Amino acid sequence: MQYNILSLSGISALLAVTLTPVFTESAFAQCVNSHVGVQVNISERPARQGSNIEMGSTGPCTGNVNSSSATQVNIGGRGQAEQQQNVNQQMRGGKSNPTGVNGPTINNAVVVPINVKTPKNFNR
Image (cartoon, rainbow, N blue to C red; front, side):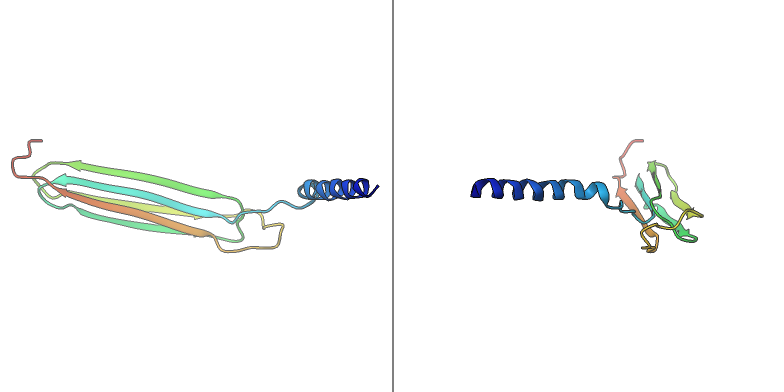
């Protein structure tokens, strides 16, 4: 009889662990602004490479994502190339987080400038 009591208590514990997610409230993630950019210049002279990135949000924000990517490539040429990335991402409106946790919007931007100097006999 001792095994039956242990078996029943084990089954009860397993059911409690299994059904707990069904009765609990879902989690909500904060909002995220994201930009990834690459600037590649392959020529004798280095390019003027830059970026201007503005990101923000107004009010509480939950569960939204703004994401962008950009790639700029210059190969050859006699003059100096200019590569510029301008990004403006704004989140407006939205509902407050029903869990009561309203953290800030996460802003993440990465722009990688790459200059590769070619030899004088590079034919392009």
